[in-house]
Length: 26
Image (cartoon, rainbow, N blue to C red; front, side):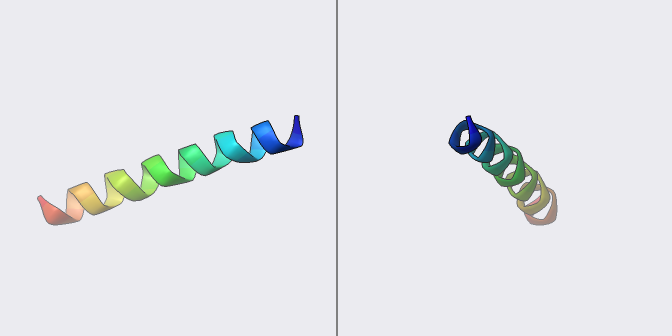
C-alpha cells in the first residue's frame, strides 16, 4: 500500500513537471 501510494504521488509530481515544462516551452 505504501509503495502504491508513493507511486501515485510520483505520477502526480511528474505530471506537474510535464505541465510546467510544456507551458514554458510554448
